[in-house]
Amino acid sequence: MITIVAKSIVKEGKLEEFKVLTKEMIEESRKEEGCLSYNLYQDVHNDHILTFIEEWKDMEVIDLHNASEHFTRIVPQMKSLREPGSEVNLYQSIS
Image (tube, rainbow, N blue to C red; front, top):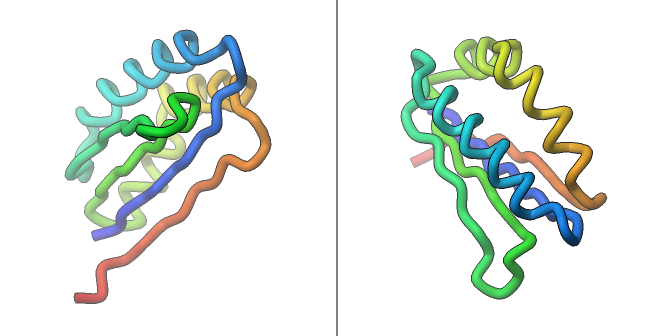
């Protein structure tokens, strides 16, 4: 299993537009084979920090996800609404 933690710092005034895109991303991603969970969290101290925490079966299904129509269409739109400093980390369980 691979866990993805994708943190976004959303530009001022763009939060609602960003959330609309994330809703579609979540709905479509959860339908994908190999998606174990796909959730979005908002920082309790800074509402402009949103973090996806995703669990996937393996790297093969992540590669398929990254090539999907909804991912390739929505991610560039989301990127335009983010501040520098956003990050994506992939983790593999070791215990």
